Amino acid sequence: MAMQVLRTGLTGINSLTISLGFLTVIGILGLTADTATTGYLHAMVELMILAYSLNLFTGLSGYANFGHVVFYGLGAYTVSVVAVSLASMGFALPTFMYIIFAGIFAATFALVIGYPVLRLRGDYFAIATLGINEAVRVTICNTPWLGEGRGIYILGLVPTYDIKALYIQLLVIAFAVVITSYLVLKTKLGYGLRAIKDDEDVAEMMGVNTAKYKRIAYALGAFFAGLAGGVVTLQFACSFPEYFFIGRSVDMFVSIVLGGTGTVLGPMIGATLYWMVKDHLLISFPYFHLIIFGTILIILVLFFPGGIIGLLNRFLKKKGRVLE
Amino acid sequence: MSQENIMTINNVTKMFGGIRALNKVNVEVKKGEILGLIGPNGSGKTTLFNVISGFYPATEGTIEFKGENITNLSPHKIARKGIGRTFQIVRPFGDMTVIDNVLVSGLFSGKMGVKQCRDILKTTRLIEREGDLAEMLNLAEKRRLEIARALALSPEILLLDETMAGLTHTEVDESLKMISGIRNEFGLTIILVEHVMRAIMAVSERILVLSEGTKIAEGSPKEVSENEQVLTAYLGRRV
Ligand SMILES: Nc1ncnc2c1ncn2[C@@H]1O[C@H](COP(=O)(O)OP(=O)(O)O)[C@@H](O)[C@H]1O
Ligand SMILES: [Mg+2]
Image: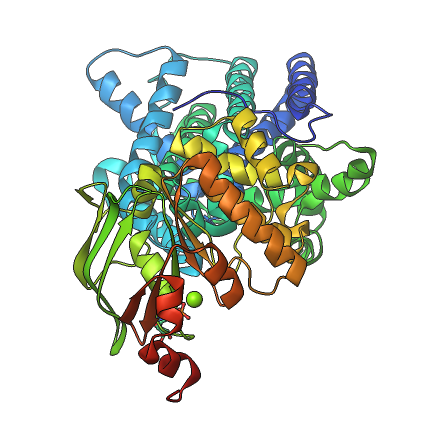
């Protein structure tokens, strides 16, 4: 695949620089702050990664993947299964190796399941993704060697770490997913996906191998979601069926729609704002916050389909600039 | 003009349920010609384009392009082999800029980069609008964008589906000039579907007439315009 970075039109403001700068600030804050703050920022960066991973596929191709959380859950379980297997043979790997396994397994699963499921379009695709997530969760809950409903504990089976060390690993993933998003948007893959989002049939007739490019993006998104899932297992020394909770998909969706789908900066802005607001609401209204977010999502989709980036661009375009 | 065939359509039939949209159609397309394709509404012109470009599988028959059977290839492969098309109801990538629309086919055909795509925008008089979103264009511009996008595939055959419908008299004249210009500049073969009779008569070297999915006439513009069966099909009466 050509990795030529294409520059056309208005690219006055470099969204990549802004995103990486912001991430650096969050990173430094988390590393220098007390443990509680690090934990708070850790969860926020995790949501960012998930939002970017969803954006890579759904944001660019327009395919609504409500079951994206399945890749997060599979990543989480990969780590515990690998950790338990290796421990039974008497050895362990450096922590980042477990995380990489998680990404690779999630991506492989996406490549395989993508074959049938990416033939579906629109609502059918969205429903199928929910079905896949549920099928995987139920399978795990009924499989003894996967811990059924109890989960798999790996305490003492992997090298010990502290929250800051884990936070650094999460930051590395976050940097990687932001840079990947930028490269995807600016190269052939991104052009193909945007064309698919606009009109898949026409894209196909203009030479885009739509089946192939959808599958690549689907697997790429799965890879990063899988990495995030790998980190969470290491964080709690356990993988639970709760990691497949569909509410996590909602978190990612609201984040990218709020920030601006298909952009480089959008998922970061969206995830940050969403996380800060959600944290407050969660404390004040444990259940009611779901209704509030549902309403926000509807308002966004109906009136501000471009999200915050879309709104900013309305003003910036008059000055001949644009945020990506 | 050489008499070499670039494409051969053999006995192509297309059924939609019980509707026979194309009925055993045979066409030999000569390299470098502008072939006019006419026929009343619903006679199967767009369907023929959809079958050639692989969007619909043919129910029966084969299509050969430069001696190769392309009948069951997927549309992106057919496009990359050098068959570009436009759509009767314009379908630009509305959320992408004009240049990015063209770049999609340029990149995926593997034949053109930003610079060559800009050149195509100059030829199709869209260069001033390269940074605008495609949905902002007016109808005439959208039609030209569709031609530009097809040209970025660096095609050998261009299928133009009513690219002049709804245009003003002056715009039709400009469009005619552009089509002849494109053919000469790029050495293309063009199949042109058009309802604007004076336009099709002016540029086509050969005309093919479809009626209810069946080819009823083929020949020079003069021959076709004097063909009794054609007049009946078009005007619904004997002349
Ligand atoms: N996708 C489709 N499904 C069912 N019938 C179709 C479809 N596309 C075209 N047809 C039918 O095929 C016939 C030919 O249509 P078309 O090729 O669009 O005609 P033309 O372009 O000559 O006006 C018409 O009867 C039309 O209703
Ligand atoms: Mg038609």
